[in-house]
Length: 255
Image 1 (tube, rainbow, N blue to C red):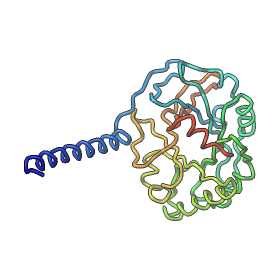
Image 2 (cartoon, helix red, strand yellow; image 1 turned 60 degrees about the horizontal axis):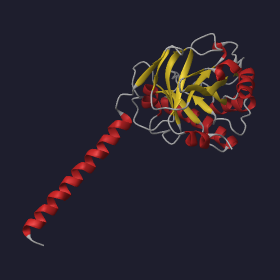
Image 3 (spheres, one colour; image 1 turned 180 degrees about the vertical axis):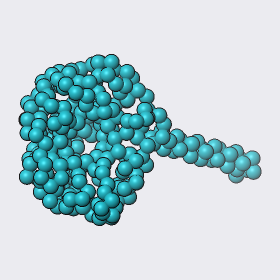
Image 4 (tube, rainbow, N blue to C red; image 1 turned 60 degrees about the vertical axis):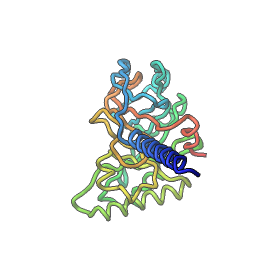
């Protein structure tokens, strides 16, 4: 090979490498740090992030009696309520008073449902798992079980809290043969749960700033608003998106 040809080849190789590095960097930044685009939906009373096709809500007794038929019928442009996470239990003995009615009515209305447990860090993770499993009987086509972790306590160490969380997750995973989803806000997860629970699916709450969740890991659900207005619900309600395709969403459901 001539010296000129060698120099040209070297120059071309450098150009290609620079473009590859730029492309990889762009992809990384786009996936984790670029601002999300939002569109105003006045009927829902909120701005909804674009480029997500599957939307849902999460509810508890705070939403009172819900007309799930009306919830399912509400459709604005391309946005409809496809799924709902429903509070089931809290701590070692509390059962949400609307849980049973919400689960049954959501299914009848054609809303894909899931159940979540609100974790109390000062209580045994094993006993909390027992409370959840005694109350919740998930079926084929339901979303995986969810552990809502958003509180700490000065009465126990972070390590002890993590061990109790792991107890709950292990027991519930053994029952349903699927990894439970962890719900938490971005700051809490980064401070108390990161690295220890990164192999669990994450449902992240991030709505104080209009942007994608600022968290250095993948997530599958994003709670982007706490003040949506949905037909059939008398109070404001949390609004969520699923981070993936319809195929990926269906693969997530219990078999």
